[in-house]
Length: 384
Image (cartoon, rainbow, N blue to C red; front, side, top):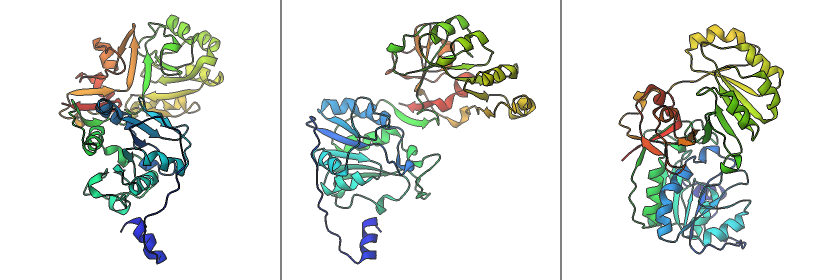
């Protein structure tokens, strides 16, 4: 039974089409679709790969003079190459949806507003069945509803999920549904096969063999990979220009840390067989934020953790298994590494010296090495 029908039955009332009071919102876009990306109350409805969807559909939308308007909250990530609006009232949302050509969202109230105006709708459902909250007033031919859970499973009905079921939806599947509903011909070069758990955490890292101008990058801070190249001369020069996170498997000069502690956001100490708990004690004494991580087997961590029992927990880094990613040919990364004025997508690419041209050209053939597969959770795997 639909939610509206359940309310009507319990209240003894008939269902009729509502009246919606619209409130003007200045918008200069002539032709646009609306994507609503955030639900404050239901984390389980928030799809993490909207940017991938935008990247796939945008070339086809541009060919048809269609823009993308994002509904989001003030602190939400803004989708690149879209127009973002925040702090909207429901009345303003109604005005903008009424003047759009399509509404896309994850089972939100805006979806029902779009149904009232008979708009084309793409609805993503994860924590409940689509039949229970589908667009009630819509023509079925104008609606595409996608359920994220498997046909042999059931929705959780939970506001919070970990991992989120909605992220089971591949970006190319969502993108195809949008373009099909808009009657736009398209052909994607790649299909998403698997997406790693850490893929959505975009980072920019660097090896200390160059100096980066902080005004030239799109992040307020950067991760310096001292574990890949331990060069304290370049480290000191970089710390003098911007705030950084340091990732190291060796001790770093106490003088440098004391001198630039205001620009050290955190030090991630990678504990290996050769480690020094006195270095971590020094960080604690200096009130430097730090984290302890290790790739060592759990038996090895158990053996040495007594040295760190007053300093913090050691987080075990679980290496990904190559066998979990069969038949993959390409990978896409949101983890970028700068080294010697070149841009790379992975540690394995740095090792093999396989740079990319820029941040937008971030698809490469899989690098079949142990180092690559150890970091597989950072990548999205594709097939053509």
